[in-house]
Image 1: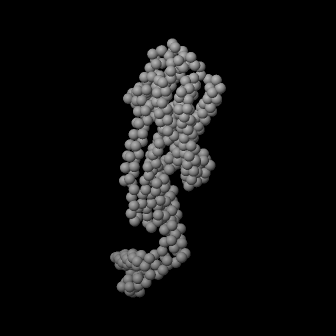
Image 2: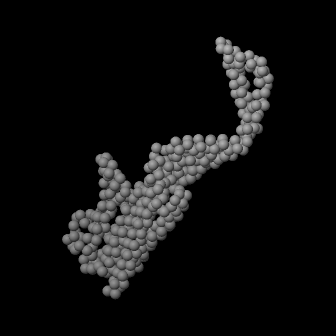
Image 3: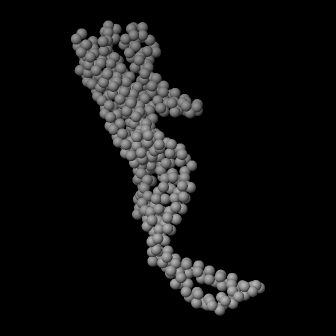
Length: 432
């Protein structure tokens, strides 16, 4: 009796530790999923690389810098002088042509005579290059350049205000909401804080996941130690099943796979200046088994509903029924132990639950998605003298998958153990 009490106390400690770790894994995984969702929304490509407003801000800034540092080069000065001379020659020719037009008025005839007497048209054309140079010199004066820069900058700013994304109000509302949620004031501070938070959440969630595995290992060690103690097997089996329940619940409610594809860096040159876009999220999804079931069912399509029901049945209902039936078989008396339904779920439902198939399917989906994303994103990796793009695939398996795999393996072990527990221990021994 003393050994049973000591074992029961130890098993209670293991069960509590597993439950606490499972709770922390579920809680931290939910926080990680929400934080990553917020991050992917804020850094979505539609709010960055594909945003008119984002391009407007960068182009206005670059062009504004060019305006403030603008100076005529010798080549530009020569070309501008030619243009001014051409304009002046045209103006003189048009003026002479207009004055020489036939007129019937006395005043008009006097003006024409005076112009022909005092103005030499050929000499006027010869003086045009000096007039053009004086205009260029006036344009290049610091005060004149400053006035022109101010005028051009004002027009550029107005053009920037008139150019905006149709979803700018929605984007601003969303941005302000997320900034307030994380208590930051700009994009850089948001990215820095969420990245740090995600790293901390991932580290903690994996730590608690491995702690759950440690409790399972402890139970397996106890089974090895007490494999010949028939009187302790029911007690040990009870707590093992309870731990399996925890593993299953955490496994189906916690995120199992995270699909994350993004353009990590996009850099190129635009009119002599660098343009850069960082962490542009192309695609992000993070789901648990129950999330997938819910999504399939709410589609209202009969084929999706059937698939969702099958996933729920084989991944949740059958495993729960199997664990419950093993407890009823051991502690429900002879009538319950011989019940066909209980006997089916306790000993024959393993091949129907297909939880192990689900594990393999998720693993294959992970490998497939990972391979497809990696292959597609590889085409976005471009680098030359003026353009550089780096695409990354951050698809990962999450703690929920670790918990579900642990349940599948542990459940198979318990099924084998149940077949080996002697019938007399089932009928005559009471658990603690």
